Length: 158
Image (cartoon, rainbow, N blue to C red):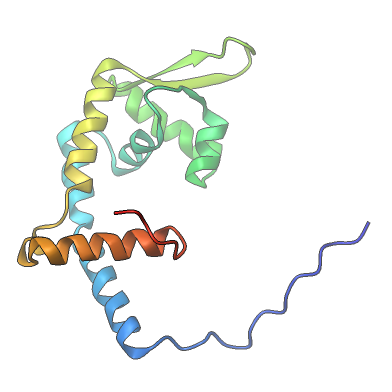
């Protein structure tokens, strides 16, 4: 059995249009300006920033095995153990034995954990104040353009 043929890597990346490169730098600067929000929200919830990352990755409707959580977060399962320990200490998550396999531990949010997830999302995903400088029409245009970029260039119905 042969490996699938991989296309050759380009010798050097294609240079983006200067205006696009500048826009990307501005967008990344805006995102990086928001990084202190992570520390503030984590402190408000009484957990570490790593614990906050885990909290955001747990679906309150579907407890998931710790190994699956590690895959979703692209990190080592042993690191997720420390994150979940942090959430458990704060009373935001619990480990449960999976119903179909006693060897597997699933991670579930507690009621306070679900409330904390809402607080985290409100604190981290609210548009930055800088967006208030844009008109409502500009905000909608920006949202449409970002959605189109994220969706792979497919036009959206809105």
